[in-house]
Length: 129
Image (cartoon, rainbow, N blue to C red; front, side, top):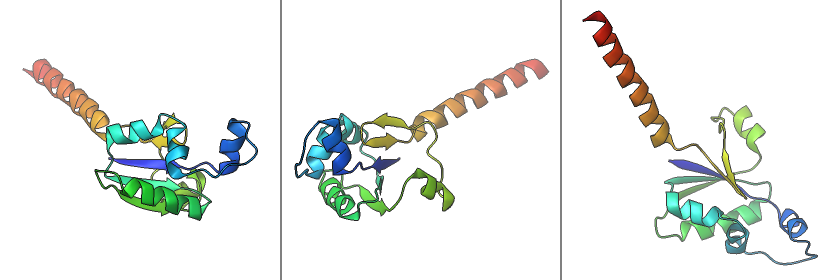
């Protein structure tokens, strides 16, 4: 499973918390929301960090790669529109956890598809027998 991480700027963080200035570590940026818990719960094999701030994205990449499960982390400069324009798959119906956008779980979707195909096969077998 892969996960797309959309990093907000420090200005967004400061605006949300009505602060004037503060140096924010990647841990604090993630810990501000349930995002880090969600990432740790899912333990994706691959993370794509989307950000216009490459320095912040590099800090986030180092932090995420230091986690126990050692995910593969890529940095993508730009937003979802640019991501799609370059031929990458659109993240449909992302579940948003603060700064994190999750793809719907691929395993769940494949199980639902298998269930529907199983029901279809059984019903066709019963109809034609």
